[in-house]
Image (cartoon, rainbow, N blue to C red; front, side, top):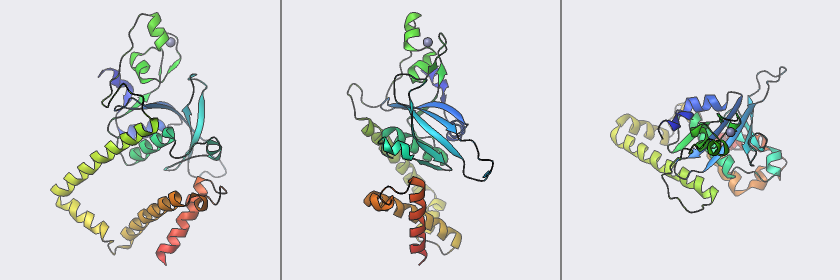
Length: 265
Ligand SMILES: [Zn+2]
């Protein structure tokens, strides 16, 4: 199995570079449950009239059996944010849709230079017999799709899972469990660093007492603003999106302004 995993990307900066390279096909797989999603991320051409605009990537997820054509849009990446598009929302895609949630969580981790534990990032391969794209990790690891493997009498590589198997589980729950496990490990790491490192303790105290340094205060503020926005969005989504008049991007900007003004008052 260790050889098979050579088709995976192991570090956060590499994963980020790959997914934003312009024309990336890849699969995220939970090592705990075996749950997986295949994505296609294509970069939008830069508008020559507005070359300084934030870069945009269109994100699609594989949603059918035909792995060359069954991709549906779930949103777009703009700068460091992954957002649902109006079209995707009309089809019922939200930030809680498992495929959106999984990629957003991985993307935000990569941006923080963290490779989530128990998450595998697979390149899409090509079948060594018929040349069609392969995105099921077992097929990528084998180098052959299931039909071609059977034709050649080759047994496909089996990838293990570390969590419970044999029961059909709710996909949303699978990702929430995965994320909870990761958060738990992260909290544990933080706790250990806190206990062993006096610098870490000091910096923790400084942030939590909102030091008088204006730069630091603005960092604390933007963190606070993000918190308030999250709260606002979850408790009053109608107001946040102004009854659907605003898209994700505009709603965020409006709310950020509102809280920035409130906090500086
Ligand atoms: Zn094949």
